[in-house]
Length: 321
Image (cartoon, rainbow, N blue to C red; front, top):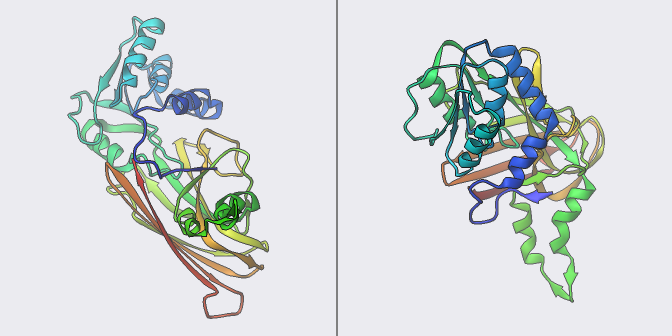
């Protein structure tokens, strides 16, 4: 597990993440299949947030007549060099563009590709960026990859994850560091491969985003759960499903095949023993802009047959982009 938002800034383009995306066979295969199913010979394809350019190169291989890769960071220079080495005669152009606010090319796209998907789907601002390009660059009847994103959540039991969070409750060199414990709970975490979680209820499909029509990213999400498997409740895990083409999805559930995406974990500030039939109400509020994002989450628990709340956790975290 690693903390998603704590440091006062991020590298402009972390190469380890880009390498993980290139090496993610499930991701690359799924997008390649989507491009094969969607791109027609001679189409103009726009790849937003192109990064290494791998999706732009795949679009060319699938028959695109012209490909524009839009990228704001310096990694674009390496993408251009990669094109010159591998596809010197192809009509592939990498343009340094801030897709969120910058001046966009005048070209019109038959296919718009946007893989700005965070671990919960929304963190990389796919909705405002894709809406802007959709409205300004997509031809009537044009296609988007992805065209739908489903946001998912589930209450979980995970001794492994929770033990890491509770480390501040122990003494080190006979010094009590428990004042730091609330800080650990008011954080949003990325679950790494191999960190096991056990579902305490059926996962909830909390929001479906139709990227052809959406105007604004949701800021408030909520879902209700009935516990179907007793256990120790430690927090909420969230993830996304994205439809890349008809009947072709990427699913980043902890129960699905591993991808470079993980899941997002929202902790509770104490452990609760839950039984079958207990109820959980989860509310998530997300505010974000170019500089930071602010998460607030509220988890309410009611034991079976009782009207009073057994717990009402209210936590929040701020992360700098």
